[in-house]
Image (cartoon, rainbow, N blue to C red; front, side, top):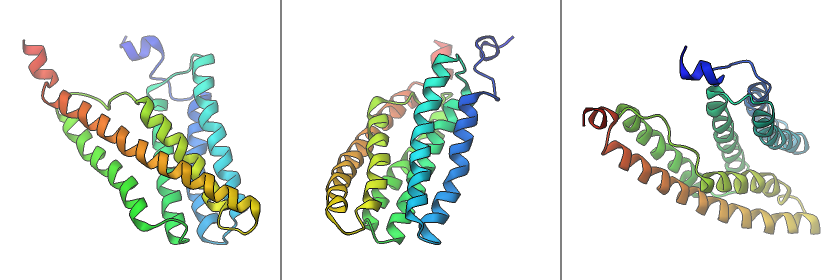
Length: 199
C-alpha cells in the first residue's frame, strides 16, 4: 500500500473536493455575468460564494480529516482561475489598467515555467507560503470592492478607496511571494533528487 493510500490523501470524492469543484464551475458563470449582461450583483454573489467555499473546504478538510492531494491542487487552481477571470473582466470593463493585470499574470507565468524545471529535478510544487495566502486574500477581497467602486455615491467612494488599498498591497505581496517561490525553485533545482540520492 502506498503512503498516499495509507494516509487517505489519494481520495477523490470528499466534501472539500466537491466544494473546490463547485468553485471551478463558478468561474465561467462569473465571467459571463461580468462581461455579458453586466449583472454585477450576481457576479458579486458568485465571488462571495467562492470566498466562502474557499474558507469552508480548508476547514472541513481539517475537521473531517479529508485532506487529499487532489484538493491541494484544486484549491490554488480555483484561486488562480478566479484571479485571472476577474482581472480579464475588470480590464475589459476599464476598471483597472492593463499593466496591473500583466504584472499579476506575468508573475504566475514565470512561476509556471519555473515549475517545469522543478519537476525535471524530481520535485513537486513547493508548499504554499503564507505570503502567497495573504496576497490571494487581499486580491480576492479587492476585486469585488473594485467592482462596487465603479458606481456612484458615498458607499462606492469608500469601496473604491478600500479596494485600491487591497489591490496595491495584494499585488505587492503577490510579486513578493513569487520571488520567494522562485528562490525556492532555484535552490531545489541546483540540488536535484537524483543527485541527492546518489550521495
